[in-house]
Length: 563
Image (cartoon, rainbow, N blue to C red):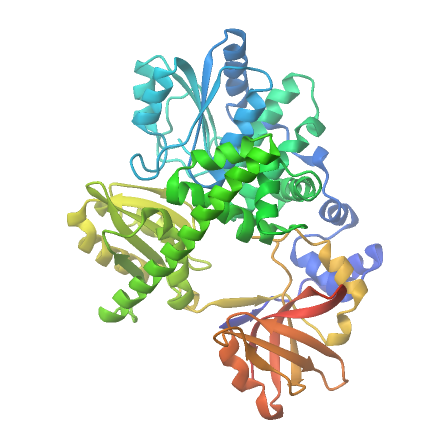
C-alpha cells in the first residue's frame, strides 16, 4: 500500500484553534485539515444544527414542483412515486410516499424490476401510472436523462417531477420541475445530496408551505441517513447534518422496518459504518435478488410484527445474495487468471449467466484483488449490462464518456456507474476502455493509498483525546476517520494471524517508552512476518473502542504496517 502523509496545515491556524478551543495540537491539526479554522466553524462541526439546512426553495424548480404537487392535492389527482431499486431509490420512495400520504390518500409507489425494466424511468412504469389514472409522477434517484420517457408520458396526459442527483446530459427532460443540484443552472449551495436527500428537500419545501418547521420531519431522517451511508456521498455540509440527526433517530426511535432489521442481526447502537454494512445490504438484497418493492414495503410498515416478518424474508434474500456474489467472484477471478489479464490496467469480465443483481458487488470484490477500474458484464435481454467500480481518485464516469461510441446507455458517478451495450460491441468496448484508462489514469492510483492525517506517539492517545475524536463522526467521504502513523514499534511477542484462514493480524504494539496498544488489522494477516523476532515496525491505524466482558478499552484499527 502507498502511504501518503497529509501536509502539515498552517501553524498559525492550528495554534489559533488550540487557543480558542483549548485542545491539543493533534486535534487542532485534524480540524484545520477539514477546513475548520475558527470557533464558529468548529461549533458547526461539533454541534450540527438542523436550522443550518439551506432553504429548499434555493433549488432550481423547487417552486414549480411544490406548486404542482399542491395542485394535485387540491384536484384530488392520483400521484405515482417512482424510484430506483437500490437503497437510495427505495428509501426515497418510502420517504416521499409516506409524507405525501399524510396529506393525500391517492398515492401509489413504483420500483422498476431490475431484470425486466432495468435502471431508471421505464415505459412499463409509465403505463402502470396510466392504468391507475395517475396524472403526476415524481421520480427519485433517477430521471435526469429520461427525455424520451417524459415525452411519452406527456402524450398520456401525465406530468413529471424529477428528483435526481446524477449528472445531467446535454439536455434535461421536459418535466414540470427538475430538482437536481448538479444542474449547471442550479445555484443550490450544496451539490452532493443523495437522491433521498433531494427527496427530503422536497418534503421540507412542502412542509414549509404548511407552516411546519424542520422538527416535524425528524422521523424521516433515518431513511436519509441510511441513503447517505449507502450511496457513499460526502459527509460534509448538509449531508453531515442530515446523517448526524438521522443516526439519532435510528438509535432512539427507529421506524419498525429498520428496528426489525437490527433485531434480526442483534445490533443496538449504530454508526454510519453499520448502516453501510448491516442495514444497506439487506435493503439492497430485496432489489438484487427479488424486487425492490419488498424493501419499500418494509420501510413504510408501521406494525412491528408485520415488519419482523418482512425483515426475516429480506434476511433470506441477503443470505442468497452473499452466496451468489461469492460464487461469481470466484468465477471472475478464475477467468482473469485463465485469460492472463492480471497485467492490464483495467478489469473487464463477462459471463452471460451471472446474476445481474450482484455484479456491482462483484466488481468491488475484484478491486480488492486487482486494484484497478473494473467492469463486470452479464446478459440482460438482448443486451449486455455492466456495473462499473473505480479506484480512489479515478473518474470512471469520464472514462465511460470517452468510450461512448461503443455504449448504448450509461449513467452514474465518479466511482460507480452502470451501462448497457450490444453483444457485438463487447470486445471493441473492452479494448477502448483499456485504452482510455491507460491514457488518462495516474499510475500511482493503481496502488491502494493509506492517507495519513498525522504522526503521533502513543501517549497522545488518551481517553480525553478519544472522547473528542468520537465527535468527529459521522465519518464518510470528505470526513474520513482520522488515520495516524506511529513509528519505532515492537510487538510484545503475542502478535499472530487470526481468523479461520489467518487473514487478519492481532498484535500488541509497544513504543520505547513502554506505552502499549492492542491492534487488529483485517486482511493483513500476511504482515505477521514484519513483527516477529523483535523487528521494529511502523503502523498506520485509526483509533477505535473495544468492548470485552463489559470493559471498554481503546485499540488500534490497523490499516497497514511496514518494517
